[in-house]
Amino acid sequence: MNLLDIYNRLKSHFGKQHWWPADTPFEVIVGAILTQNTSWKNVERAIENLKDEGVLSPEGIYRISEKKLQTLLKPSGFFKIKAKRLKNFINFLFEKYEGNLNHFLSLEPSLLRSELLGIKGIGKETADSIILYAANKPTFVVDAYTRRVFERLGMIEKDATYDEIKQLFEEHLPRDTEIYNEFHALIVELAKDTCKKRPVCEKCPLENNCNF
Picture 1 (cartoon, one colour):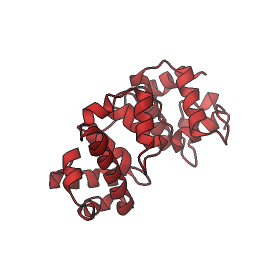
Picture 2 (tube, rainbow, N blue to C red; picture 1 turned 90 degrees about the horizontal axis):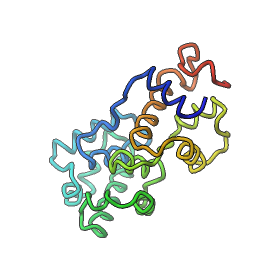
Picture 3 (cartoon, rainbow, N blue to C red; picture 1 turned 60 degrees about the vertical axis):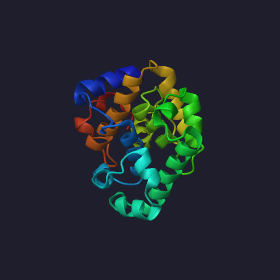
Picture 4 (cartoon, rainbow, N blue to C red; picture 1 turned 120 degrees about the vertical axis):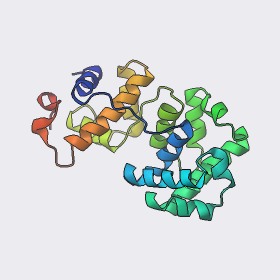
């Protein structure tokens, strides 16, 4: 199987995933920052707190105190660190782009990625998630599930770096935002449904082609 075969098989098996679950690009960004080291259900609770407080916007986060933000983000875990990271992003946005999120997200993908990676607390996975799901630009997101699935398939080495895995996908798939969006979501679904830490191989749609 090549990567496009795998994508088509997963899509046929699981169906369209409708990612990212958010109402606005800014909500995507907040979710991408908050989802580190926690479940999505916890992120949703924190986002609901921000909505209830009326501060789920760049201006809202900019004007609220970091202490108050910490309180609202408590359900997401590591709330002090995440409040700092969210403030870092917002302060950058206002200092360099006058708080204009649309202008920032309209940057060319490689420049946008470089800018995001320059913000303290935003790593490669978070930056790529923001570019793909908030800016709607083609960049492939690699996470722990991607590594697990494709190591088991024998398509990446155990010590492959983030950028090496990202390059594999981007070189062997059409440069298409929708495909990147769906493929990442489908990999997550596969890893949660069957390719778990203790895999349920007999129900996996890729079982016949897996080295594991």
